[in-house]
Structures are given as C-alpha cells and as structure tokens.
Length: 338
Image (tube, rainbow, N blue to C red):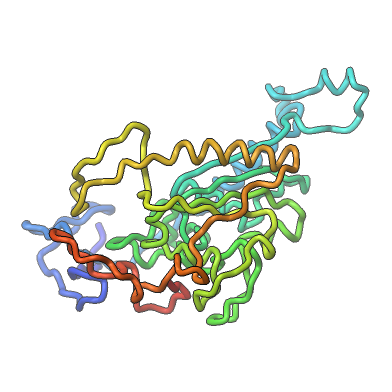
C-alpha cells in the first residue's frame, strides 16, 4: 500500500491550493476523502509513482494489421489474408503485389482523433516495407496539436486536458500545426507531418473541430502562428484541410434533444454533426482516389474578425448566465495561445 502523497483543493485553476488533510489510501489505485466532497472544485493529488508501462504498442499493432490487410497474401504463420487479391493478380498476369484495397481511411472523435494525429506524428503511417498505411484520415475534435500523452515516462494516453481536470497533460504541447514550422517562443521546429514528409507516406487529411476545441483546446493554433496571426495552411501543407463546425459541442448524437446535464449550467446543444461528416467523407474519398480537389479550409480567421483573443470577446449579459472568461488560460510554460 502506498504511503506518500499530497492532496490539495481549489475552486479555480489560478486559485491558491488548499491542503486537504483528511484523506487516506484505499488501495494501490484509489484514495478516499472525507465527506462532504466539493464535486465542482479541483482536487489535485501528487504522489510518487513506480513501474511505468511501455506505451505505443497500439500504434505498431494498428500499422501492422492495416498493412497486412492492404498488401499481404498471408500472415507469418501461413493464414490467408481474407482480402487478398491473389487470384485477380494471377488472371491479370501482374507479377507485382498491388494493394488488396483501393484506399483505407480512418475517422476518430476526440481521443480517437488524437490517436490518428499521434500515429502520423511518430511515423507509423509508413509500414515496415516503407509503404503508406492510411490513405486518408479525418480526425475530429482534437484541438491544437492533438497530441497524446504517450511518449513519456508514466504517461496516461487515455486522459485529456480539460477545464477542471488533467490540465497539465502533454496533449497541447508542440507540434501544433500539421506543417513543419519553427515556434518563435521555444525555437523548436516541428510539425505533425514531419516524419511522413521525409518518407512520402503522408495521408490526405481533413481536420475538423467543434466550437469546444476553440474554447477549451486552443484549436486556433492549428491555423495561426504563436502570435495569433493567420497562416496559409493549404500552402504550407497541401494535403490537409481544416474545417470548423460552428456552435456545436464536443460530442453529439443523432436525434438528440436539449436537456439538462449535471456538469452544465445550460441545456446541452443537440446540433448534430453527422451530415457534415458524411459529406466530407465523400469529398475525402474523391480526393484520394480521383484527385478531385476538396473544399477549401473553412475556419475562423483573425483577418476578418471571426477569430479574436479572449479579452476581445464581448459576451452578452444574459440573465442566469455566469460567463467568467476563457476557461483554459493557464499560467505555465506552455506555447498555447488564444
């Protein structure tokens, strides 16, 4: 049973931390706090950990499995690939090993979208025979960078930096853009596409964001520099498009209704994003397979006033609304900007 740890409490991120004395370990993975707990406040528990796990195997598994379906006739044990085109190649007299599939695509929301960006970032879209794995990707609701907290000791790849929790995970760190760029604050030169550009294995990408990612995930850094100036992203990364679904929340489902939620002051937004994904899926397929140019990126921009810094937001005074400004501005050594 662990014996170390310090528990603190505060209402807002920038408030002074209040030490909590009345807590105890329940087991190796759980602590207990004396009631009543302040469920809407921030509890922060710092402790000395041990035995970090090996991370990143999932990326390798995804790469190898998808590559097997695309290119192989059988696996290392002789089991046939159910998608193999051996008979067709023989009839056509093709001695090469063409792909079993015309194209392979991936889509993911939130953490699933960050998995895709992380997959490309670390060069996993190149298989062990130097071939492309995914032809097109459609990550949704990832925020700037869309990184996973994985390539670190004691990483926690399943968590996400949010308004009141996991705020110091490594999700929002560099690189922020798909294009390879130099960050003027840190001096680091990086980009999500850096590895695949070196091997010519970059997929076509539609990066899609909801309103939540601009408020809570600094998503503007996907298409602005560190000073908030617009970037010509299609010139810097021609295989990427950025699309913004305005006034939509992070997660929506078909046929939803406005309802109360425990963590929300107002009713949830039932606006559904499915039709947008359907239309963009067709556009992505046409771009990959037929070279048909997709719609240009559609995002808020500083030059036309649709993207402004937090202090310039003029939120209206509405009764029963407790708007207190941009929620995710944190005083730390981060390159995140509005």
